[in-house]
Amino acid sequence: MTTIKPAHRVEEVQEYYFSRKQKEIVRLNAEGKDIISLAIGSPDMPPSPNAIERLCEVARDPDAHGYQPIMGTPELRTAMAGFYKKWFNVGLDPATEIQPLIGSKEGMLHVTLAFCNVGDRVLVPNPGYPTYTSLTKMLGCEVVNYNLCEDNGWQPDFRQLEQMDLTGVKLMWTNYPNMPTGGKARRETLEWLVGFARKNNIVVVNDNPYAFILSHEHLSILQVPGAKDHCIEFNSMSKSHNMAGWRVGMAASNPTFISWILKMKSNIDTGTFRAIQLAAAEAYNNNTPEWHETYNYDNYKRRRNIAEQIMTELRCTFNPEQVGMFLWGKIPAEIDNVEDLTERVLHQARVFITPGFIFGSNGNRFIRITLCAKEDRLQEALRRIREMNAAGQHNKQ
Image: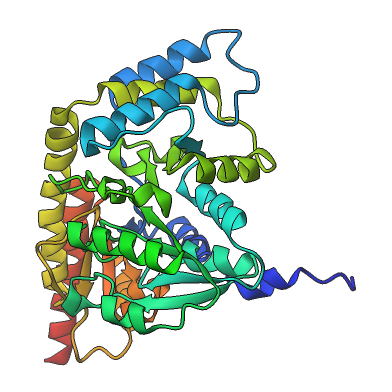
Protein backbone atom coordinates (compact mmCIF):
# COMPACT_ATOMS: atom_id res chain seq x y z
CA MET A 1 0.00 0.00 0.00
CA THR A 2 1.37 3.42 -0.91
CA THR A 3 1.92 5.94 1.86
CA ILE A 4 1.61 8.89 -0.51
CA LYS A 5 -1.17 11.28 0.46
CA PRO A 6 -2.83 13.94 -1.69
CA ALA A 7 -2.50 17.67 -1.13
CA HIS A 8 -4.87 19.10 1.45
CA ARG A 9 -6.83 20.86 -1.31
CA VAL A 10 -7.99 17.47 -2.62
CA GLU A 11 -9.88 17.06 0.65
CA GLU A 12 -11.19 20.63 0.54
CA VAL A 13 -13.40 20.10 -2.51
CA GLN A 14 -15.57 17.39 -4.02
CA GLU A 15 -15.55 16.22 -7.60
CA TYR A 16 -17.76 18.56 -9.61
CA TYR A 17 -21.40 17.45 -9.27
CA PHE A 18 -21.98 17.06 -12.99
CA SER A 19 -18.78 15.08 -13.37
CA ARG A 20 -19.94 12.64 -10.68
CA LYS A 21 -23.50 12.44 -11.93
CA GLN A 22 -22.49 11.98 -15.55
CA LYS A 23 -20.94 8.63 -14.63
CA GLU A 24 -24.36 7.46 -13.47
CA ILE A 25 -25.99 8.81 -16.63
CA VAL A 26 -23.48 6.91 -18.78
CA ARG A 27 -24.27 3.71 -16.88
CA LEU A 28 -28.03 4.20 -17.23
CA ASN A 29 -27.72 4.91 -20.95
CA ALA A 30 -25.58 1.78 -21.34
CA GLU A 31 -28.50 -0.13 -19.80
CA GLY A 32 -30.76 1.28 -22.52
CA LYS A 33 -32.54 3.88 -20.38
CA ASP A 34 -32.11 6.78 -22.86
CA ILE A 35 -31.77 9.53 -20.24
CA ILE A 36 -32.83 13.00 -21.42
CA SER A 37 -30.41 15.47 -19.87
CA LEU A 38 -31.94 18.82 -18.96
CA ALA A 39 -29.12 19.61 -16.57
CA ILE A 40 -26.05 21.17 -18.20
CA GLY A 41 -25.96 24.52 -20.00
CA SER A 42 -24.02 23.47 -23.08
CA PRO A 43 -25.56 25.19 -26.14
CA ASP A 44 -26.58 22.63 -28.74
CA MET A 45 -27.03 25.11 -31.60
CA PRO A 46 -24.10 25.91 -33.91
CA PRO A 47 -22.08 29.11 -34.10
CA SER A 48 -22.61 31.42 -37.04
CA PRO A 49 -21.52 29.93 -40.39
CA ASN A 50 -18.97 32.68 -41.00
CA ALA A 51 -17.11 31.70 -37.81
CA ILE A 52 -16.92 28.05 -38.87
CA GLU A 53 -15.74 29.01 -42.37
CA ARG A 54 -13.01 31.21 -40.90
CA LEU A 55 -11.91 28.40 -38.56
CA CYS A 56 -11.48 26.02 -41.49
CA GLU A 57 -9.75 28.62 -43.64
CA VAL A 58 -7.11 29.44 -41.03
CA ALA A 59 -6.65 25.79 -40.03
CA ARG A 60 -5.61 25.03 -43.64
CA ASP A 61 -2.82 27.63 -43.44
CA PRO A 62 0.41 25.67 -42.88
CA ASP A 63 1.87 28.60 -40.93
CA ALA A 64 -1.01 28.85 -38.43
CA HIS A 65 -0.16 25.95 -36.14
CA GLY A 66 2.58 27.35 -33.91
CA TYR A 67 2.36 28.93 -30.48
CA GLN A 68 0.29 32.09 -30.33
CA PRO A 69 0.63 35.21 -28.17
CA ILE A 70 -0.60 34.49 -24.64
CA MET A 71 -2.15 37.95 -24.54
CA GLY A 72 -4.19 36.99 -27.62
CA THR A 73 -3.92 38.00 -31.24
CA PRO A 74 -4.49 41.69 -32.09
CA GLU A 75 -7.44 40.61 -34.25
CA LEU A 76 -9.22 38.93 -31.35
CA ARG A 77 -8.57 41.71 -28.84
CA THR A 78 -9.77 44.31 -31.34
CA ALA A 79 -12.91 42.29 -32.05
CA MET A 80 -13.60 41.96 -28.31
CA ALA A 81 -13.28 45.72 -27.89
CA GLY A 82 -15.64 46.24 -30.82
CA PHE A 83 -18.14 43.82 -29.29
CA TYR A 84 -18.18 45.78 -26.02
CA LYS A 85 -18.55 49.10 -27.85
CA LYS A 86 -21.35 47.84 -30.11
CA TRP A 87 -23.47 46.05 -27.53
CA PHE A 88 -22.64 47.74 -24.21
CA ASN A 89 -21.34 51.14 -25.39
CA VAL A 90 -18.22 50.55 -23.27
CA GLY A 91 -14.89 51.74 -24.65
CA LEU A 92 -11.96 49.38 -24.07
CA ASP A 93 -8.36 49.70 -25.23
CA PRO A 94 -7.77 46.39 -27.03
CA ALA A 95 -4.04 46.49 -26.28
CA THR A 96 -4.23 47.06 -22.52
CA GLU A 97 -7.76 46.59 -21.14
CA ILE A 98 -8.68 43.16 -22.50
CA GLN A 99 -7.28 39.69 -21.79
CA PRO A 100 -8.62 36.77 -23.86
CA LEU A 101 -9.19 33.65 -21.76
CA ILE A 102 -9.59 29.93 -22.37
CA GLY A 103 -13.08 30.32 -20.91
CA SER A 104 -14.25 32.06 -17.74
CA LYS A 105 -13.33 29.13 -15.49
CA GLU A 106 -9.70 29.69 -16.40
CA GLY A 107 -10.12 33.38 -15.73
CA MET A 108 -11.44 32.69 -12.25
CA LEU A 109 -8.21 30.87 -11.47
CA HIS A 110 -6.00 33.66 -12.83
CA VAL A 111 -7.92 36.44 -11.07
CA THR A 112 -7.86 34.68 -7.71
CA LEU A 113 -4.13 34.02 -8.07
CA ALA A 114 -3.53 37.65 -9.06
CA PHE A 115 -5.45 39.26 -6.19
CA CYS A 116 -5.61 36.86 -3.26
CA ASN A 117 -3.00 35.47 -0.89
CA VAL A 118 -3.52 32.30 1.11
CA GLY A 119 -5.88 33.12 3.96
CA ASP A 120 -7.55 36.08 2.24
CA ARG A 121 -11.33 36.15 2.16
CA VAL A 122 -13.58 36.08 -0.93
CA LEU A 123 -17.26 37.05 -1.14
CA VAL A 124 -19.24 34.35 -2.98
CA PRO A 125 -22.98 34.46 -3.79
CA ASN A 126 -25.36 31.87 -2.32
CA PRO A 127 -26.74 30.48 -4.60
CA GLY A 128 -23.96 30.78 -7.14
CA TYR A 129 -21.77 29.01 -9.64
CA PRO A 130 -20.00 26.21 -7.73
CA THR A 131 -16.59 27.08 -9.20
CA TYR A 132 -16.53 30.37 -7.25
CA THR A 133 -16.48 28.28 -4.08
CA SER A 134 -14.27 25.39 -5.17
CA LEU A 135 -11.52 27.52 -6.68
CA THR A 136 -11.46 29.80 -3.65
CA LYS A 137 -10.97 26.79 -1.38
CA MET A 138 -8.38 25.15 -3.62
CA LEU A 139 -6.23 28.28 -3.54
CA GLY A 140 -6.29 28.46 0.26
CA CYS A 141 -8.70 31.36 0.64
CA GLU A 142 -11.77 31.63 2.86
CA VAL A 143 -15.24 31.60 1.32
CA VAL A 144 -17.56 34.25 2.77
CA ASN A 145 -21.08 33.71 1.45
CA TYR A 146 -23.51 36.54 0.86
CA ASN A 147 -27.18 35.81 0.34
CA LEU A 148 -29.27 36.10 -2.79
CA CYS A 149 -32.95 35.64 -2.00
CA GLU A 150 -36.06 35.04 -4.05
CA ASP A 151 -38.01 37.90 -2.47
CA ASN A 152 -35.26 40.33 -3.52
CA GLY A 153 -35.19 39.22 -7.14
CA TRP A 154 -31.95 37.33 -6.45
CA GLN A 155 -30.07 40.61 -6.08
CA PRO A 156 -27.48 41.15 -3.32
CA ASP A 157 -28.85 42.27 0.03
CA PHE A 158 -27.11 45.65 0.20
CA ARG A 159 -27.88 46.23 3.88
CA GLN A 160 -26.56 42.81 4.88
CA LEU A 161 -23.35 43.31 2.91
CA GLU A 162 -22.75 46.71 4.47
CA GLN A 163 -23.11 45.21 7.96
CA MET A 164 -20.75 42.27 7.33
CA ASP A 165 -17.23 42.08 8.72
CA LEU A 166 -15.20 42.65 5.56
CA THR A 167 -11.79 42.35 7.20
CA GLY A 168 -9.43 40.55 4.83
CA VAL A 169 -11.89 40.47 1.92
CA LYS A 170 -10.03 40.99 -1.36
CA LEU A 171 -12.44 39.77 -4.01
CA MET A 172 -16.19 39.58 -4.64
CA TRP A 173 -17.85 37.39 -7.28
CA THR A 174 -21.07 38.59 -8.88
CA ASN A 175 -22.99 37.20 -11.84
CA TYR A 176 -25.67 39.23 -13.63
CA PRO A 177 -27.79 38.16 -15.42
CA ASN A 178 -27.68 35.56 -12.67
CA MET A 179 -27.11 31.84 -12.91
CA PRO A 180 -28.77 29.67 -11.63
CA THR A 181 -31.71 31.89 -10.70
CA GLY A 182 -32.32 33.85 -13.89
CA GLY A 183 -32.31 37.09 -11.88
CA LYS A 184 -32.03 40.06 -14.22
CA ALA A 185 -29.11 42.45 -14.34
CA ARG A 186 -30.25 45.74 -12.82
CA ARG A 187 -28.47 49.02 -13.38
CA GLU A 188 -28.98 50.04 -9.75
CA THR A 189 -27.37 46.79 -8.58
CA LEU A 190 -24.31 47.34 -10.78
CA GLU A 191 -24.02 50.96 -9.62
CA TRP A 192 -24.21 49.90 -5.98
CA LEU A 193 -21.56 47.20 -6.50
CA VAL A 194 -19.13 49.73 -7.97
CA GLY A 195 -19.64 52.02 -4.99
CA PHE A 196 -19.28 49.09 -2.58
CA ALA A 197 -16.02 48.05 -4.24
CA ARG A 198 -14.62 51.58 -4.06
CA LYS A 199 -15.68 52.15 -0.45
CA ASN A 200 -14.23 48.87 0.83
CA ASN A 201 -11.22 48.58 -1.49
CA ILE A 202 -12.49 45.25 -2.88
CA VAL A 203 -12.19 43.97 -6.44
CA VAL A 204 -15.65 43.06 -7.76
CA VAL A 205 -15.70 40.58 -10.65
CA ASN A 206 -18.95 40.42 -12.61
CA ASP A 207 -19.31 37.17 -14.57
CA ASN A 208 -21.49 38.19 -17.53
CA PRO A 209 -22.03 35.37 -20.08
CA TYR A 210 -25.86 35.46 -20.18
CA ALA A 211 -26.59 39.02 -21.34
CA PHE A 212 -27.88 37.83 -24.72
CA ILE A 213 -30.03 34.86 -23.66
CA LEU A 214 -33.75 35.75 -23.54
CA SER A 215 -32.84 39.35 -22.76
CA HIS A 216 -33.08 42.37 -25.03
CA GLU A 217 -31.32 44.58 -22.48
CA HIS A 218 -27.54 44.25 -22.43
CA LEU A 219 -25.96 45.58 -19.23
CA SER A 220 -22.33 45.57 -18.12
CA ILE A 221 -20.82 46.65 -14.82
CA LEU A 222 -18.26 48.58 -16.91
CA GLN A 223 -21.04 50.93 -18.02
CA VAL A 224 -20.92 52.46 -14.53
CA PRO A 225 -18.56 55.47 -14.38
CA GLY A 226 -15.35 54.60 -12.54
CA ALA A 227 -16.02 50.85 -12.62
CA LYS A 228 -12.69 49.95 -14.19
CA ASP A 229 -10.83 51.23 -11.11
CA HIS A 230 -12.17 48.42 -8.89
CA CYS A 231 -14.03 46.01 -11.17
CA ILE A 232 -13.34 43.28 -13.69
CA GLU A 233 -15.89 41.81 -16.06
CA PHE A 234 -15.78 38.37 -17.61
CA ASN A 235 -17.58 37.61 -20.83
CA SER A 236 -17.70 34.42 -22.81
CA MET A 237 -18.60 33.22 -26.29
CA SER A 238 -19.92 29.95 -24.85
CA LYS A 239 -23.51 31.11 -24.40
CA SER A 240 -23.84 34.25 -26.53
CA HIS A 241 -22.28 32.72 -29.65
CA ASN A 242 -22.96 28.96 -29.14
CA MET A 243 -19.23 28.28 -28.82
CA ALA A 244 -18.90 26.50 -25.45
CA GLY A 245 -16.45 23.90 -26.72
CA TRP A 246 -14.23 26.50 -28.36
CA ARG A 247 -13.21 27.89 -24.93
CA VAL A 248 -13.04 31.59 -25.75
CA GLY A 249 -13.69 34.17 -23.06
CA MET A 250 -12.35 37.53 -21.95
CA ALA A 251 -11.57 39.67 -18.94
CA ALA A 252 -11.93 43.44 -19.19
CA SER A 253 -10.67 46.02 -16.70
CA ASN A 254 -7.99 48.66 -16.23
CA PRO A 255 -4.47 48.09 -17.66
CA THR A 256 -2.91 47.35 -14.27
CA PHE A 257 -5.40 44.62 -13.37
CA ILE A 258 -5.10 43.12 -16.85
CA SER A 259 -1.30 43.05 -16.58
CA TRP A 260 -1.52 41.14 -13.28
CA ILE A 261 -3.93 38.61 -14.79
CA LEU A 262 -1.63 38.16 -17.79
CA LYS A 263 1.34 37.58 -15.48
CA MET A 264 -0.49 34.66 -13.84
CA LYS A 265 -1.82 33.31 -17.14
CA SER A 266 1.60 33.41 -18.82
CA ASN A 267 2.98 31.04 -16.20
CA ILE A 268 0.12 28.53 -16.55
CA ASP A 269 -0.86 28.15 -20.21
CA THR A 270 -0.03 29.22 -23.74
CA GLY A 271 -2.05 30.97 -26.41
CA THR A 272 -5.13 29.45 -28.00
CA PHE A 273 -4.89 27.93 -31.49
CA ARG A 274 -4.73 30.74 -34.06
CA ALA A 275 -7.67 29.42 -36.09
CA ILE A 276 -9.92 29.55 -33.02
CA GLN A 277 -8.84 33.10 -32.19
CA LEU A 278 -9.43 34.42 -35.70
CA ALA A 279 -12.73 32.56 -36.07
CA ALA A 280 -13.85 34.00 -32.72
CA ALA A 281 -12.94 37.46 -33.98
CA GLU A 282 -15.03 36.79 -37.08
CA ALA A 283 -18.02 35.84 -34.90
CA TYR A 284 -17.64 38.95 -32.76
CA ASN A 285 -17.35 41.22 -35.80
CA ASN A 286 -20.17 39.82 -37.90
CA ASN A 287 -22.91 38.47 -35.64
CA THR A 288 -25.84 40.80 -36.23
CA PRO A 289 -28.75 41.82 -34.00
CA GLU A 290 -30.87 39.45 -36.08
CA TRP A 291 -28.56 36.53 -35.18
CA HIS A 292 -28.52 37.30 -31.47
CA GLU A 293 -32.07 38.48 -31.01
CA THR A 294 -33.96 36.51 -33.64
CA TYR A 295 -32.16 33.22 -34.24
CA ASN A 296 -30.96 32.60 -30.68
CA TYR A 297 -33.74 34.46 -28.89
CA ASP A 298 -36.56 32.79 -30.79
CA ASN A 299 -35.11 29.31 -30.40
CA TYR A 300 -34.66 29.72 -26.65
CA LYS A 301 -38.12 31.26 -26.31
CA ARG A 302 -39.80 28.21 -27.83
CA ARG A 303 -37.77 25.90 -25.61
CA ARG A 304 -38.56 28.01 -22.57
CA ASN A 305 -42.28 27.55 -23.18
CA ILE A 306 -41.86 23.77 -22.96
CA ALA A 307 -39.60 24.04 -19.89
CA GLU A 308 -42.32 26.07 -18.16
CA GLN A 309 -44.80 23.27 -18.88
CA ILE A 310 -42.36 20.79 -17.32
CA MET A 311 -42.06 22.98 -14.21
CA THR A 312 -45.83 23.21 -13.97
CA GLU A 313 -46.18 19.44 -14.36
CA LEU A 314 -43.74 19.02 -11.44
CA ARG A 315 -45.88 21.53 -9.46
CA CYS A 316 -42.90 23.87 -9.14
CA THR A 317 -43.38 27.63 -9.11
CA PHE A 318 -41.17 30.02 -11.07
CA ASN A 319 -40.77 33.67 -11.99
CA PRO A 320 -41.79 34.08 -15.65
CA GLU A 321 -39.63 37.22 -15.90
CA GLN A 322 -36.32 35.40 -15.37
CA VAL A 323 -33.73 35.44 -18.16
CA GLY A 324 -30.85 33.23 -19.29
CA MET A 325 -30.64 29.68 -20.64
CA PHE A 326 -32.13 27.93 -17.62
CA LEU A 327 -35.47 27.85 -15.84
CA TRP A 328 -35.25 28.02 -12.03
CA GLY A 329 -38.22 26.74 -10.06
CA LYS A 330 -39.24 26.22 -6.43
CA ILE A 331 -40.32 22.74 -5.40
CA PRO A 332 -43.70 22.08 -3.72
CA ALA A 333 -43.85 22.56 0.05
CA GLU A 334 -44.73 18.93 0.72
CA ILE A 335 -41.43 17.70 -0.76
CA ASP A 336 -38.88 17.54 2.05
CA ASN A 337 -35.70 17.21 0.00
CA VAL A 338 -35.09 18.45 -3.54
CA GLU A 339 -33.24 15.22 -4.42
CA ASP A 340 -36.41 13.26 -3.60
CA LEU A 341 -37.85 14.99 -6.65
CA THR A 342 -34.82 15.01 -8.97
CA GLU A 343 -33.97 11.34 -8.31
CA ARG A 344 -37.58 10.27 -8.84
CA VAL A 345 -37.64 12.15 -12.14
CA LEU A 346 -34.32 10.59 -13.15
CA HIS A 347 -35.18 6.99 -12.36
CA GLN A 348 -38.90 6.96 -13.16
CA ALA A 349 -39.15 9.45 -16.04
CA ARG A 350 -35.55 9.06 -17.21
CA VAL A 351 -35.01 12.83 -17.22
CA PHE A 352 -31.98 14.42 -15.57
CA ILE A 353 -32.63 17.83 -13.99
CA THR A 354 -30.40 19.74 -11.61
CA PRO A 355 -31.09 20.00 -7.86
CA GLY A 356 -30.52 23.53 -6.64
CA PHE A 357 -28.48 22.57 -3.57
CA ILE A 358 -25.34 22.27 -5.72
CA PHE A 359 -25.38 26.08 -5.99
CA GLY A 360 -25.52 26.66 -2.23
CA SER A 361 -27.93 26.36 0.69
CA ASN A 362 -30.24 29.05 -0.71
CA GLY A 363 -30.89 26.67 -3.61
CA ASN A 364 -32.07 23.80 -1.42
CA ARG A 365 -35.73 24.26 -2.38
CA PHE A 366 -35.17 24.75 -6.11
CA ILE A 367 -34.50 22.85 -9.33
CA ARG A 368 -32.96 24.05 -12.59
CA ILE A 369 -33.87 23.00 -16.13
CA THR A 370 -31.57 23.82 -19.03
CA LEU A 371 -32.86 25.13 -22.34
CA CYS A 372 -29.92 23.50 -24.13
CA ALA A 373 -31.96 20.64 -25.56
CA LYS A 374 -33.82 20.29 -28.83
CA GLU A 375 -37.56 20.93 -28.75
CA ASP A 376 -38.39 17.30 -29.50
CA ARG A 377 -36.32 16.15 -26.50
CA LEU A 378 -37.97 18.71 -24.25
CA GLN A 379 -41.38 17.54 -25.48
CA GLU A 380 -40.39 13.93 -24.84
CA ALA A 381 -39.24 14.86 -21.33
CA LEU A 382 -42.60 16.53 -20.71
CA ARG A 383 -44.43 13.43 -21.98
CA ARG A 384 -42.42 11.12 -19.71
CA ILE A 385 -42.99 13.30 -16.65
CA ARG A 386 -46.72 13.43 -17.34
CA GLU A 387 -46.70 9.65 -17.68
CA MET A 388 -44.80 9.34 -14.38
CA ASN A 389 -47.32 11.57 -12.63
CA ALA A 390 -50.26 9.66 -14.10
CA ALA A 391 -48.77 6.37 -12.91
CA GLY A 392 -48.27 7.86 -9.46
CA GLN A 393 -51.89 8.97 -9.28
CA HIS A 394 -53.04 5.54 -10.43
CA ASN A 395 -51.00 3.83 -7.70
CA LYS A 396 -52.61 6.03 -5.04
CA GLN A 397 -56.11 4.95 -6.05
